[in-house]
Image 1 (cartoon, one colour):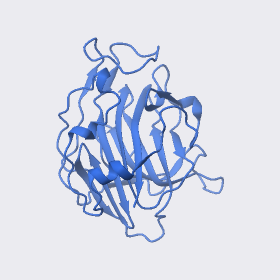
Image 2 (cartoon, helix red, strand yellow):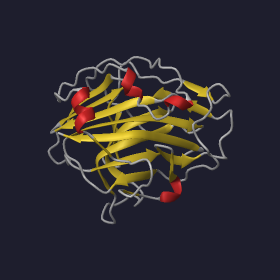
Image 3 (spheres, rainbow, N blue to C red):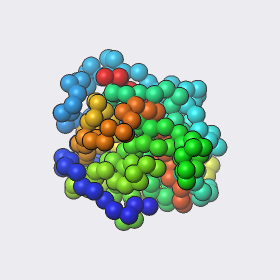
Amino acid sequence: MIASLILIGSAPATQAEAPPATQSQASKSVSESIVADSSAISQTSDHDFEQRCRPLFDGTILSRWEGGMYWFHTDGNAIVAGRLEKPIPQNQFLCTMETFINFDLRMDVRMRGTGRNAGVQFRSRRARSSDDGIPRNEVIGYQADMGQAGNESIWGALYDESRRRKMLAVPEPRFTVKWTPSSPEHPAETDSASASDSTPQSEWVSLRIVCVDDQIEIFMNGRRTVAYRETDPSIPREGVIGLQIHSGPPSEAWYRNIRILSL
């Protein structure tokens, strides 16, 4: 997928230690129990965010999103990308119908299945017929990565999807996430008949993306994994938010508590 990695100054990340979420915790944000690193580019406190943010998903229908709905469904208060019963032939993206410029975006994320590659697009756009060599199912723009590339963790990395096609920044050291099989003690939070008790799944992780003008920060479990400044004036500073599942083996990416505050 990725030919080379470019390391750009980012704050150290630590391994996630939170225990797997139980069914009673499913509706709560992981970030409620995490003290976040301070953002260098936004003065918004956690309290202000909770008071002023708005949800991008109401927990019921995907009325403000567009994409190949065969690959996306809702489960409780989560949007689920991908399928566990079949391989995913192409990258798939579910995108907002609204664009955003400067913002603080927060959600909880996890993955399930044998494929381990997904992410959240931002300041992005759908591919057009005039974009030579880019399939129409693709999205062009920044992506906060989840999962693995080869044997390396890419949780909390910044990738440039379908444009420069390379990592712009990665956590150093890499941010790692626990994977465990589902079990009767920690059942999968899904009604999917395709899931089995042995389906591997990651723990829930809080993801935060902050964009202010040329600057981008990514946080995972409150630890800043990327601090990046865009120096190319031709790169758009505005675009849609998108939820991705990467092509590959059967897998799901779960996104819940999706909230945004315009800055």
